Length: 99
Image 1 (cartoon, rainbow, N blue to C red):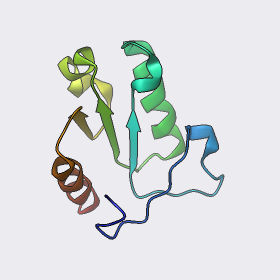
Image 2 (cartoon, rainbow, N blue to C red; image 1 turned 45 degrees about the vertical axis):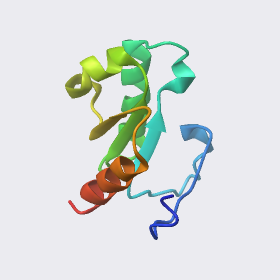
Image 3 (cartoon, helix red, strand yellow; image 1 turned 60 degrees about the vertical axis):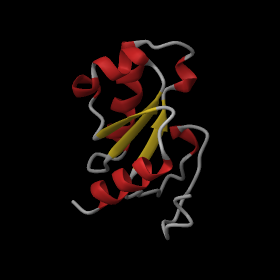
Image 4 (cartoon, rainbow, N blue to C red; image 1 turned 90 degrees about the horizontal axis):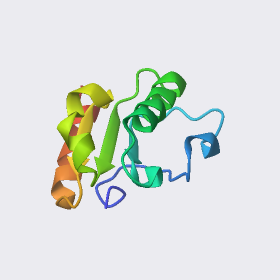
């Protein structure tokens, strides 16, 4: 959907799979790989992204209710609760890239 909106999209399985010279304008990640919400692991994931791409906005997509309860503490620029309308993702991407 983001490609249809004119964005260049690069998909990687994990942060370590991103090209060494990658310089994304935005990172979208999911917490699904945590297999149950774990605040420490969620913070570590977001911290690794911030360390690799320090000025890059981060969108977290999650169905974990616990993550939604502590949105302000996760460190992401936006959190979308799954399932969400695709328009919410497109609007959030546009808002973060317009900064």
